[in-house]
Length: 308
Image (cartoon, rainbow, N blue to C red; front, top):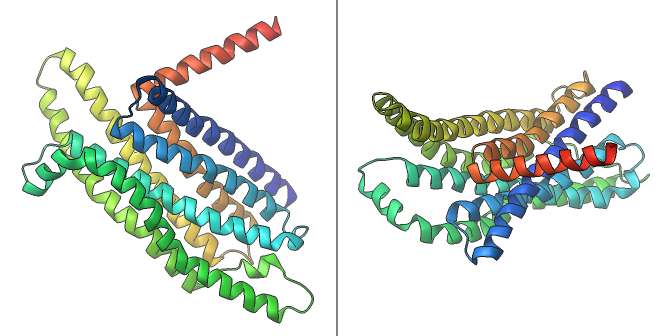
């Protein structure tokens, strides 16, 4: 069992470093642009908010998993683990809402539909983005309140009944009620995300087929940008579904008694979502990709100078 935990911790470390670098890059590039030009586009505003939420989410996930690996030793730190668990829930739901608004923004700005509601959103989306981001802070808090209340009641009951001390492993055990609350909190932004994502993929696919009949120059520029957006949306759907399935299996602890290794596999899958989706967003954004390549070349030069 110990080798499996060590391997999973190594993978989690790689995902943690990747997520910190990717989300940190989004924050630095957009904040530098904001300081230099005194303004930030709506897309960059959403990406910055998403990067900040995922940056702190990565730290929370990493610390939580370290304490989970040391659970027999850290029962005395149960209050800290419980608070980190609550922070993780809030940041997780918040980052999902930010990613949802990114999907909505892409759909409204790029897709072409003639419906009156869509045309109204197309005119008003720039003014709605700051309100949507601020509303996500409050909406995520409201969504977390039932989860926090459930955990607090369970924690107090278990603490009262446990005369020999509080065991974090028992307090953090989940029930179907908690899983239902999680699913309600996570599925709502997911369903909102799926609708514009499917509409955008459909619109871009039709446009890409039409562009295939035009010149090679148009195909190389516009079509390539559209295909990169489609890949990013499909990747997010894949990571979100895998994350959702992994977290449900982890919370239900279906395989807890038969295979603790499978529990660690679920943790690795959950940690992959905020890391690799941010990498895909950077690769699909020309400004971010250019900054990433510049930073990579700078790091290579520094390593080369130190080695020589």
